[in-house]
Image (cartoon, rainbow, N blue to C red; front, top):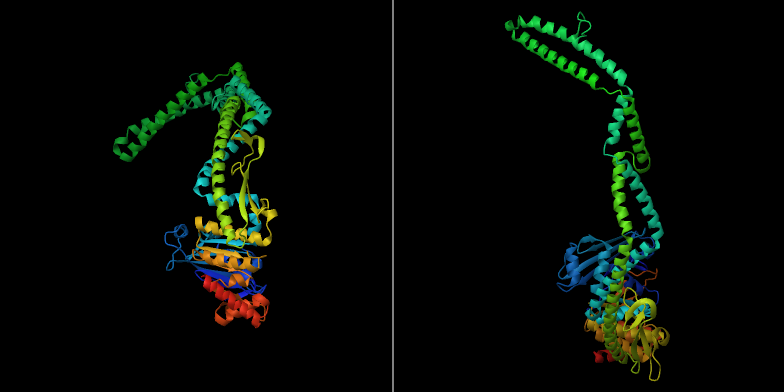
Length: 572
């Protein structure tokens, strides 16, 4: 990794061994920034406070070797990333304003993608993870992770049934608790539909009636105007001497007919005048028919206005016009059918709920049995690891229990509480020495014991669900003496299967590393490129001496440091 402007680190390169790398240095020298840098590369949360004061942004770049065809490679290639000689190039930039950018294999990618890849690439553990292991939910998750498919398969089926049961229960509760509101809604809909049905409106009827009312209201004026217009076009029978448009046009046509043969242009005009005459006669005939058909019956007008009033009463309540009233009636009829089917729906939902609860109980029992079987193997494996970590008499076990709940599901003849992960409460117990009763690790383990339990759990995981890299941030806190030596030895063994990076204050642990990195500040309080260096030979002895006695040149400390290195090499 290359780290620039992150915390106390100005510009530094961290080269990790394929096996066991120990990162050491004085308190406050910036060792934790190594962990933070890796966290950023793996999609961790960006914080503007991480950016070194005076810098515009912090940048972390990493080169991660990945097995060909691994899930991480497949996912990265799907995102458009390209591998560089079997490695993924990853970078993360955090600005002083808090903005964050990520690049993978030369392509800009969402930060969330880095987090997706992290699960397949690196397992990060720090003191906060130890505290997390004290939570029952984390202990159950650890057991489920160890059990693998034996738990994952029934848990997946259980989670699906649980989700459906929650949805059915919510719908059932809504229907039953809102029964009164729904009954009131049904009454209102029923009243409205009955009111509309009594009127029986037709689509477009309101427009037609408005036009008819306008016509009936002005019948006399319309009839008079039509008569005058008819007389102007076709003449008045009572006044044979009167001049009308039809007679004038006929006279014009006769005058032209006599000479049309002498000029085609005049012939064309004669034909057009003939068309005008035909049109005048048609219009005159329609005017006569209009006047004859015009109904001035006041009773019909009253009937039209009464019908319009009935439609207006509907449009005031149910829509702007009759079309909207009819649309309201259609949707309300569907809603009423739904509301009136509540009783039937309640029966269907109740039956489905009971069936799901029964199914959930059976799946929960299968899940519980799988966890119980896996817990015995998991506890035995962790106990065996603790023997290698200077806790030869410690015993780890699991307490898997259920809580009675009358509203729960039936499992093995008991009605117990259930949740999204089953009915089991899983608790990790530790008996640190013979005769000691098993107690929850939150109460029965010291800080050093908890560190070793955490390490033992991770080593067991390495054998069943391995990842390429393990990062431990001072998980050896609270440990010393022989226990520290055993932790170093166990980490070295783990490093034979995977890459192991440990940030530590313990020389007993650092002595077992294949490579030891020293993080040190310059006089101005920063860590520069030369501030992270690989320790070899005399330099490594001096650093281990400092870690042992706080004195690099103490002969006693140097002798002890050389002894630690020799013992570690012999153990390898």
